[in-house]
Image 1 (cartoon, rainbow, N blue to C red):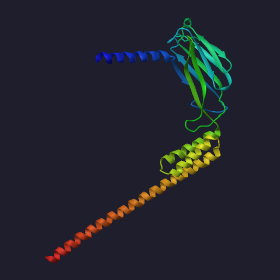
Image 2 (image 1 turned 30 degrees about the vertical axis):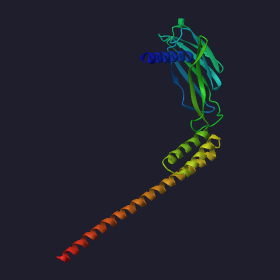
Image 3 (image 1 turned 90 degrees about the horizontal axis):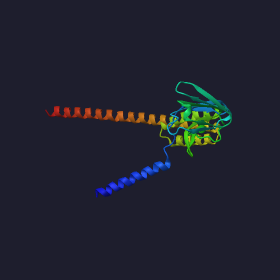
Image 4 (image 1 turned 120 degrees about the vertical axis):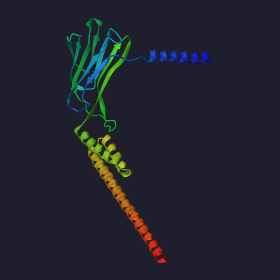
Length: 255
């Protein structure tokens, strides 16, 4: 029986090993990203990625990159040695590739791209719409592995303003139990995702007013119940005192 269990364990380990070989472990380089979390469509922005442990998987490979920015002003790829010395290569267009070789003795590589934030093609409230600003890959040994993808939430002035109104309304709706307010909030979100920002703001304001009104009514009802409860308690206390005194008066008469 123990041999059978052991065989099953060995078989499971073998399957796991084959699975790891088939899937691969991915690029083991270390990355550090400097990028805005959000940016307005039409504005110029930059993304910088620092790649360390460049020889972790292989002594020779190719670093490639692509960007979702438009009107790209250019790429700067700087190879830095342990002594701090470095050389910078520049590239135009939406992609680049540079070789990484052991003889360069690199400590890290800095990649910076500058370009214009694209227009929003489709709006989404949750999660917020975003675009892939930069994707870096490692090519070598017949394999292509993703190193890092940087996504940035992009917006228009109207969409940012509408989102702020909806978020404020959402906080009020979450604090209330009003289904009507929830429905109005959903209408606001749907309008936002359709790009109808005036409608979204109006529906969000209605949702907030409805939620706050419901909350106020609930508090008023609670106060009323507290008042009724207090009256009942006072009545019980008064009745108890009256009963006690009446019993004492009856006792005195009997004496």
